Length: 113
Image 1 (cartoon, rainbow, N blue to C red):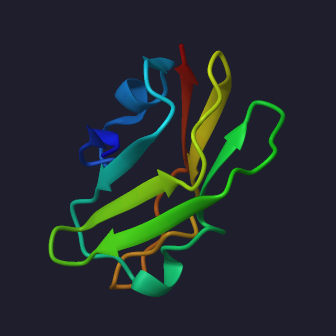
Image 2 (cartoon, rainbow, N blue to C red):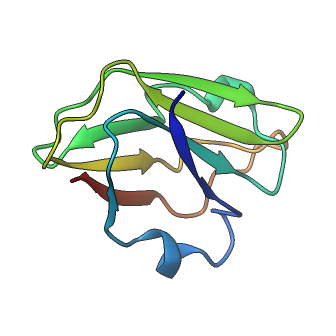
């Protein structure tokens, strides 16, 4: 079973906490990103949320939106490579059910030790 890290309330005041380098000891874990408002499920996809390596090459991921809890789950389809850095990207194209875009994009760099 993959491990996961919760990022709470990404849309409000988390910029300083989210934009930091994280290190993990496992190559397969599940990102869970919680939003404080319901999202438009049509905007929760691999185009608007994605993981790249530091050379901006995308990785294959599975994205699931839990509409009851407003949580997006991002799981790699292959294990992350050891000693490699990656970036979780959440673009402003992610919208609330009311049609409002995410105010600023979120980029979170992480590394597998």
